[in-house]
Structure formats: C-alpha cells, structure tokens
Image (cartoon, rainbow, N blue to C red):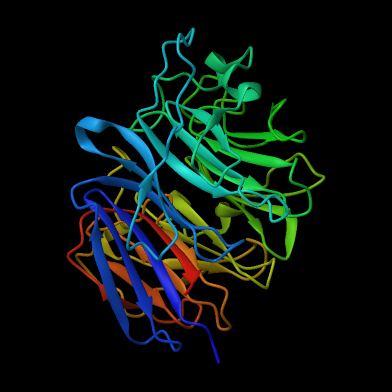
Length: 372
C-alpha cells in the first residue's frame, strides 16, 4: 500500500501541515502553527522520519529555529540559532533563515542553514545549536560574492543547499549574487560554478560570479546532473562538465524561461518541471498572461510541454516562490505547489491534471512533501 503524504507549509503568517490518505485524495489540516510568525521553511528529517525543523521569524523576538519530534504538536526553540559571530567585521546579523537542509544520510544530527544576509551555518546536534561556517562566511571574497545589501526584494540570500548523496563533503549553494558556489571539502573552501550562465543585468553578461541563482536541484537518480532555475533562464549542468546549457531556450517565447523553482523527477534524470512567471518589462512576477501552467521536459530540456489542466484559464495571476514547488516519491509522482495567493495545488499524475487542495492561506513561502 502507498504511504500517506504530508505537506509542510510555511507562510507569511505561520505554518500548516496537510496530511493525506494513502491515495492522496483526502487531506486534513493541522494548524495554524505559530500564527502570525513568518515561516520561511519547514522540513522533515528523512533520516529519522520524525524530527521537524522550522525556520521562523517571530516578530520582535527575531529569527530563530524551532524543533519538533511529535509531528508538530509541540515545539522547542534552538538554544543557539544561526548567528554571525559577535563583532562581525562586516556588521552582519541574521535577518532570517531562508533554507534548511538535512545533512548527509551518514551524518545523523547534522543540519545546514542558509540565511539572509547571505551566510551558511551548521548544526551537529539536530538543530539545537548552530555554528558559523567560517570557510564561507569569512572567505576573503565574501563581500564580493555575497554582499549583505544586495539581491532580492526580500533581501540578499543564500537561496538553497544541495549535498551530493555520494559524498558529504561535496556541496553546492544557490545564491542571489554569486550564482552557484561549490565546495568539495564540506565548506572549508569554495569556488564559483557559473560558466555560460547569463547575468544580463551586469556590464559583463557572463561573469565568473554575479548571477542570481533562484534554485538548483540534483537529479535523484544521477546527482551529476544539476538543474537550475536562474534569474536569467533555465539551465542544466552535467558534471564533471563546467559549462551550463541554457535549456530554457526551448520554452515557448511568449512564456519565456524565467521562474523561481525547478523540480526533478524522482526516477528519471531526463525529466523536470518548472513554473514560469512573467519576467518582462518591470518583472510583474505573475503567471504569464494570467494563465498559470507548469512546464515539463522529458528529454533533458530539449523540449517542454505545457501542463495546465485544472488551473484557471484566465485571470490567474499567482506565482510560486523558490521553496513552494515540490514532489513526493510516489509512482506516479505527486507534484505540489503553493501560491502567493495562499492556495495549494496538487497533481497526482505527474502534472497531467491539477486540483486545488487548500485555499485562503496566507502568502505561501514554502511547501515540502514528505511521507507520514
């Protein structure tokens, strides 16, 4: 029997957990959790299947991490949340934790956190205490790569963390001002990995660094394949290669290849999904033409097909933020997206059809699918 699914939803005004029956037809809600609190990311530890970590900003009390081991019924605050060392020479203090990433499967208790202003932090005790990753946060070029006052409308960020499942020391970061950064020694040293990625807002449109990487994802069946949704298009990199290929050129020109999220298939390294947004003129950041749709490639980005059955056919102006589009591991694979209008949509047939399973939530920042 198929295992039930839970959706861990972070919003501008709290968190919710939606749990399904095994067929993913009926859903029940738990929440709100910490109503009124900004929740940027809510993640289940796949190594134990029970520990939840939440990146939250609690009004006057500021940014912190909460931990639950009973399905979100009770929570405990981290004793030492991510924070730059006192006397930081660049005057940085954490505004919020943007991304939480469980450590490698062979490193139980290890978690990583990415913040705004851009920084990287590590916990070795299940999220109770956090340490600054000096190899990045104190790098000689950190102010060139990750200045604290640049980047997105919500502030400069490290936008995502990917860990090579074969090697805990090999990691990638998506950043808003240095593009993709890579380490092969678990954060002691770093280098940009951006060759052939455009930054059309800079004098040199193909710089060593300076790109805005919205999201990266490793293909689960081939971690040498990296998918990227960039401020300037959709890209793919096949290691050990160094040159990214702009596969978004194959998208319909009236839609373009601008968006925030990219989701790989759990079992096919040639397949991935994106949710495009309007990036023209003043960057309205809405569904192009008010007609939302997901686009799927099944040939590594050589071609894309529109998947919009069930979505509004007109006057649908929502979009999807970086962490708010995800997939489960079922067969057929389920897809889930949370919108800026507070709706959760799902597809139980790999994007062929969509239905709304939640509505009227606050603006959704993140959706993570996990087994119950």
